[in-house]
Amino acid sequence: MDASFKAIIVGAGPVGLVLAHALQASGIDYVVVEQRAQVPPEPAYALFLWPHILRIFHQLGLLDAVEAIGQPMLESIHLSAQGELLRRGQGFGELLALHGYPMMLFNRGSFAKTLVEALDNGEQHVKTNKRLSNIVSHEDGVRVEFADGTSENGSIVIGADGIWSTVRDHMKDKATPGLFDLSPNPFEAPYAGVFAKSDRIQGLVPGSNINVYQREAHVQVFTSETEAQIIAYHRIPASKERTHFGQNDAEDAAKSWLEVPVAEGVTFGDLWKSKTAGGSANFDEGVLQWWHWGRMVLVGDAAHKVNPVRGAGACCGIEDAITLVNALTRVLRSDPDPSERDLRQAFIAYQYDRESASRLWMDVSRLNLDLSTGPSQPALKAARIADMRTLPLVANGPILDTLPFPEQKNGFIPWLRKPKSRKSKDKRQSRL
Ligand SMILES: Cc1cc2nc3c(=O)[nH]c(=O)nc-3n(C[C@H](O)[C@H](O)[C@H](O)COP(=O)(O)OP(=O)(O)OC[C@H]3O[C@@H](n4cnc5c(N)ncnc54)[C@H](O)[C@@H]3O)c2cc1C
Figure 1: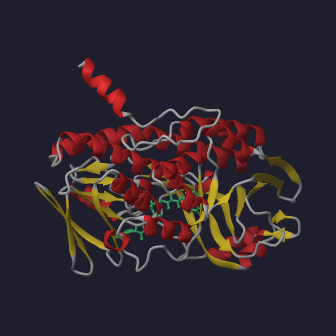
Figure 2: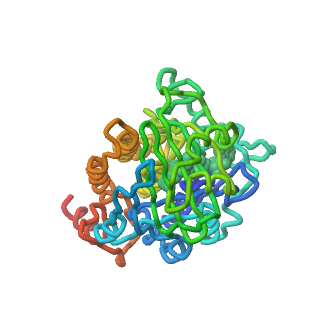
Figure 3: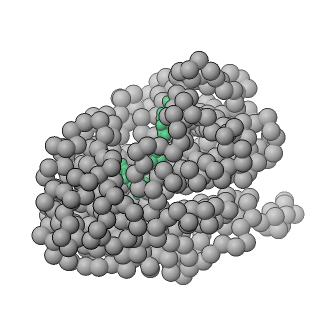
């Protein structure tokens, strides 16, 4: 691959860091620029990742490293608002049997640290205290300018900069009028709530996903050996207000759930009061109509938002990262210095591949939350049907097309996408 092509990734969240690994594995030069003073972030909430994401780590040679810091999910527990046990589910074990990889819970801090440390020359490739302030595009590339007065030159800018993406703002400014939703928030939130991380785990079993059902509201707890992640949701009139986690009225917002039982002798309030970090936010949802403009392209929360009830947001963004690298690898194979027009084709192919899956993740997550809070809740049977809609999404999860992956694990459901072997490529070429 030509070393003159360079991707500038804005944002060292989970998506930006997996993207860095995928580019590195594909021999494409990159730099990650992050506005925070440190990667991993502080505070660091939990991250729940599905089997197809573990498969990606396996292909990238990172499976052992991430499994060493992850908590395999073991059981789902469904409770009424009075604490009555409605059902214990073994769905996580079934997912392992179906796909060959577990579902795991990570502390975001250890996750980010592991990924940064596993990069070749990570300290040169990941730069902190770099807040994007401007993007200047020219015929052959881009210059990305930062608030500290420095800049980076590259071939493309990838916005992995989250829900309030600055790269997206620059795309909107430069794009033909009418393509982008110009409102400050392109997404909309039908639910709001609070979330927190607590070190109190007495009375809780590690590897559990606890769901407590109430009319118009829902509580979730995810547990590891050392911490519990709690989230509470309630319906709101659909809102486009731009909220930032942790900034506001979390204590007031949490009041209505303090007495909700989450385990024998443990309430939501017990976990909330011993939280080490927490906040309130609207849970925005939506999929952008345009994910790219010129030499700029979006991945992760910058392009789509799903509610967190199924732990799909970062997974969906990691799928973007892999798909985008596949599209870039294809274009760079035919021209190591692609024109803006060629890049546009690659970005169109990338969005085409990802858009419907993102929408489906969003719809299934929404359905899950609507069923959990609706009039016929707990609606456990209906939620099981929603679970079934996720299986094809997992089975169709992307991996890098050109990176050999002979050691892949398999379950009962076959993986639909496989690396394109040299043999089949040669066969295709000989047919032409
Ligand atoms: C309570 C809660 C629980 C969740 N749980 C899960 C879960 O279990 N599993 C899951 O898959 N998803 C989960 N999600 C969703 C998940 O957090 C997001 O989808 C994920 O963090 C998106 O990753 P990202 O890398 O795209 O963006 P982010 O994680 O938001 O990272 C963006 C990065 O860009 C940086 N940045 C922003 N602007 C600039 C700038 N101008 N210059 C430089 N850097 C910049 C930020 O500092 C940040 O580090 C949850 C969400 C919430 C709210």
